[in-house]
Amino acid sequence: MRAITATSILDTSGKCCPMPIVETNKAMKAMGLGDILEIIATDTGTQKDIPSWCERTGQTLLSMAEENGVLHYHVRKDR
Image (cartoon, rainbow, N blue to C red; front, side, top):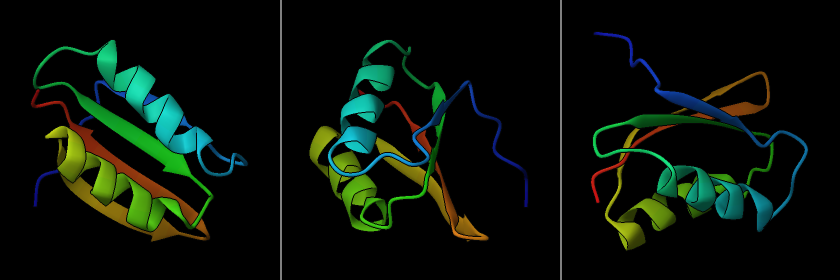
């Protein structure tokens, strides 16, 4: 399996809802089509919020993983 290379990284560690989504939305608006954003979060609510946000906004969730209580997401800008 090939590793995903992020175009940008957004670290929302220590921030609670709704800030991870607010910051994700802002970061994605500044990116180009096909770019990949890696989101780092500690808020467990993002496990539902990020996939839901991707579905709502037409972005693609490429991966979601947890490592030592830290969540990592890769989202591709498709719209």
